[in-house]
Amino acid sequence: MTRATSESCLMVTSSRYLEAPQWLRAFVRAHETSLAVLAAMIGVIGGLVVAGMGAAVSVLHAVLFNLEWGQRLSSQYWIDPVRALAVPTLGGLVLGLTFVWLLRWRPAREIDPIEANALYGGKMSFRGSVIVSLQTIWSSGVGASVGLEAGYTQLASGLGASIGRAFNLRRADQRVLVGCGAAAAIAGAFGAPLAGAFYAFELVIGSYTAASLMPVGVAAVTGYFVAHSFSPLTLGVVAGRFGDVEAHDLLVAALLGVFAAAYGIGIMRVVTWCEMLLTKIRLWSPLRPALGGLGVGLLALLTPQVMSSGHGALHFGGMTAYPIALVAFVMVLKTIASIISLGTGFRGGLFFASLFIGALGGHLFATGINALWPEINVDPNIYTIIGMSALSASVIGGPLTMSFIALESTGNLWLTTAVLVAVIISTQITRELFGYSFATWRLHLRGETIRSAADIGWIRDLTVQRLMRPDVSMVEVSMPLDEFRTKYPLGSKNQVVVVDSEGCYVGLASVPDAHSPDVTAFRLDSLLYSRNVVLHPEMNIRDAMVVFEGAEAESLAVVEAESHRVLGTLSESHATRRYAEEAEQRRREAFGEM
Image (tube, rainbow, N blue to C red; front, side, top):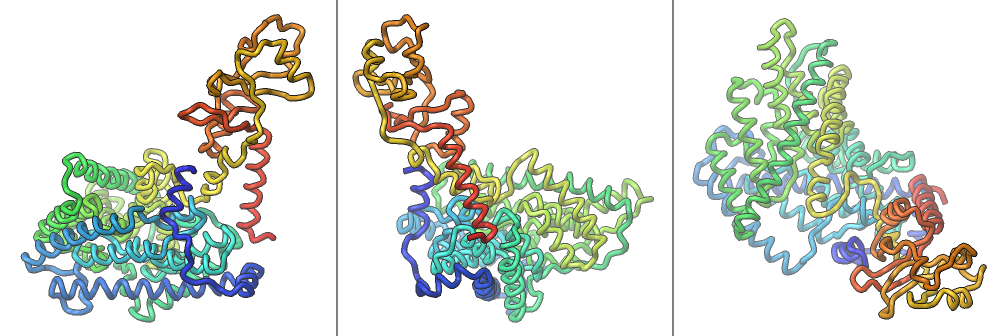
């Protein structure tokens, strides 16, 4: 069993919590419009998830920090110092102890929507999604500087995956429903249906197809209306007034994209260094989030804007009106608080934090440009939006998502053009110099090679063990050449696997070469080839093709890595044909072909 397969068995529950009747499953699979109906259901669920999780965090803030109902923690000017220190510290300790208990109950880690769609065909654990969401609510509720978007998308996508399993959907449709959950959650959280839809396409599904447009769009619009029927524009991005976007703003925006990429890469790197440092000093796991909570509490004594996800502080019209030194001070402290929170084990994301930090950074950047070149006279409010989008594009990895957030927040197409320039520059530099978004970087640190949500799970499932021929002709290496010629006359076989006296692989012998009149050797071992080039059963088809190309071989033996015993053979032509067949099948599923 391969590592990816064994992890899938651990992390994805095989039992169904609900299953539609067979006739209904067949109807849904046969009618493309039925997928839109399921998407609308998921959109309702996603909107309710956003409203419910937001309300839960508000309750925790009101109870733990003694706030009035409806007030935002990050928009406070002052917090009781005792609560500022005690709540995140003790909350981190509770989270750490709970995590240790969960490891005993559920030893396998939970997978997020990106990993689920990339490796497991859109299959997610419902219980695992609930656990992650509750941990995210608690982390933000006790004041850790983390965003709720990870919990929103995890729970909404997990429920979407459960609905897909209930209808036994095709792999491509199952992946689309996971994207529908994420689209509904992001659309509801930001009041931006277009941004929610493209978040699903860019980050969760990993591609855009005509077949996925309708369900994802339906889910995003439905999630938006449901979430904002409870609390209109509560989490929406609010921008201050700004002037016209000039031609030179496109060049300045490109420069800001460069700085945003560097800052985003730095944040992602330092979070990892923080985790590595705690691992190196061997601090007891439950104490890590407690230490992080204490750090956030100390920073909150200086400014409460560093706490929680930053929804309240994200209303730029007020925050960026502060003196420039205070804006820089808050930006630095918010960055440190986010790094500490995520690096010490609090659950959550960097979406909201990167928006807030990027907004402050864009304002500072514009102020600096005006100081250096007063004749340009750029509008800081414009660069608040550009900085917000550029930094988030670097960290989150969705350039069109961030562009649509800017467009739906401001309604200004020319400003969105400048934003698009900045996010393209920021995203491309991040891809070239770093290669990952924050989500895929975390997966990379776990040993995965995922760079996007593009479906590579079927490639991992298509292993050498599945493709090989187990009926192998084998002879011992000590066999005389004349005996070999007698046993395998011309036309009987193309090649034969040669082993030693203990059955371990030695090499391959070509039957036509053995019958060549130019061969004067008496022993078989003088004719062997591919002595040190073999395939292993756990290799996937891509790994096998690399070996074939490097060895310039038409067929290779499949050998156990430890015992060196031969399991079978695999030809390059068969592997290529099976790869093409599977790729075509996935293409047909993606476009809804029967």
